[in-house]
Image (cartoon, rainbow over all chains, first blue to last red; front, side):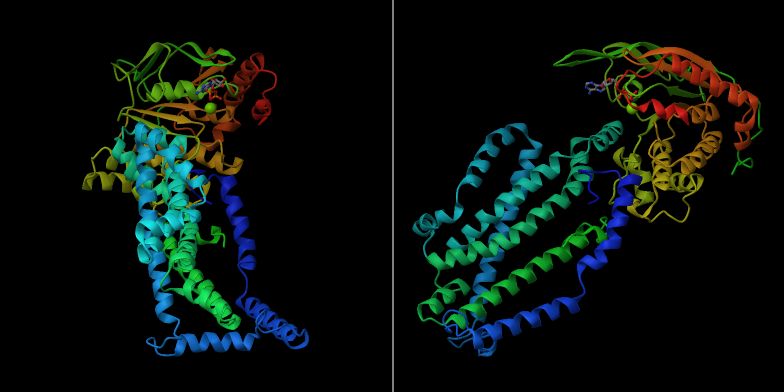
Length: 285
Length: 284
Ligand SMILES: Nc1ncnc2c1ncn2[C@@H]1O[C@H](COP(=O)(O)OP(=O)(O)O)[C@@H](O)[C@H]1O
Ligand SMILES: [Mg+2]
């Protein structure tokens, strides 16, 4: 990747990117292959269900899952069966947690990168927090914040915070020495070093953190719903499990996967706009 | 390639010195402390660069060339000794010194024009005149039409041309270059040498060029400072009095080859330390 952490697109580095671009068109995959693989997978799945005599509560037939998904997505949102309000609750909580966690991560990472005292006070605690299993905090969060959105949002934010913090911090700190020399040679002020060099240079790392964060945000929201939710996809997953509606559970799971993928893609697209200077063929995944 | 329309009269030999030299190093010593002891990177280096003189510094890797250049640039301090630029004691980075590093060090999110204008932007000196100046420089280094290109869309040679234009923006009296073409392939490098000779005819500066390419040094310089490693010392200063402006054909003259041989012999007498593998750099 062309970043300032490994800067100077010198000839050698350029050659590498060029070579990579030749392979990446192939590696990025032809959508036809993806679709063909999905069709084969679903067919195999159907065969296993039909000929393998697997009970429906263990492995529902693909058609049943599709039906459940279709029903859940097309009944009126006011209907008790509709997935839509739950999808909204989970996604909005995940997004709120994402905004909160990544905002805190960027601000705190930036402060640590800019100020030595803040860095020495804050960083040990942040790393201490990271080594804790944050999901295990959910019961406590319930005590403090109750059953509902605040708990979900907080857990999501906690999960998002760390990767964003670490990436923002290292992105701001690890700027190539020659660039720092260039700026010192121009007698740049601290503020100019930050705004003209460190911040844009850190964007690549920040986005890497955000991409990890967006997936974790949804994870946090769903886990909180399992334990402390009143609504959301996590809740209906649990409900389907109680009533052995495995097809419904599968449908919800697929819905979660799709929404997570969409969020990730949106982030990827905005990354491309923000970090316009990185040639798109060096994008991995 | 030789822009004789702009440069006035081709005059043989080097330009005459006028008054105080632009850059003076006096007894510059630099030591680095490390766990394994003290490394003397530079030991009592004294040299002067006259107004509009082109001086090259050659020497094996690790003999302190970069350190010397960074001290001249005010980006590294000397343990002892002093630097004077334009008659003033130099204590830090300054506007009238342009620097070209070995890598282009362009900001990847800024296009060619913005990169060339960076020193003006940082120095809060952006103005229509500056933009005009940047445009002229871009044309001079042969990048007209590429103003809006981002660095990753340029070849290594074009990136380094951009860096050269940037270093000239604020009309420095002194230009410091640290192996600016070291990362380029041999062909591009030769072309860039002639380009630099031409640019220097238009933008006369006091230049210090660090290089390990002997032909490059002879082709471009009025003087060549030959250094020995650990501690970094000046072995000898050789004057190159080939006619200017220098043309590509100069490399076929006996005078040129004599100078190259002379520098090469000096470097052989003061080889890199054992264990350093870059001796073969001199074989070209
Ligand atoms: N920051 C530093 N700390 C310790 N030693 C250094 C440092 N910079 C340079 N040196 C040492 O000083 C010597 C000269 O280095 P340098 O100026 O980079 O040489 P050159 O550019 O001629 O290859 C080397 O032996 C190097 O190891
Ligand atoms: Mg060097």
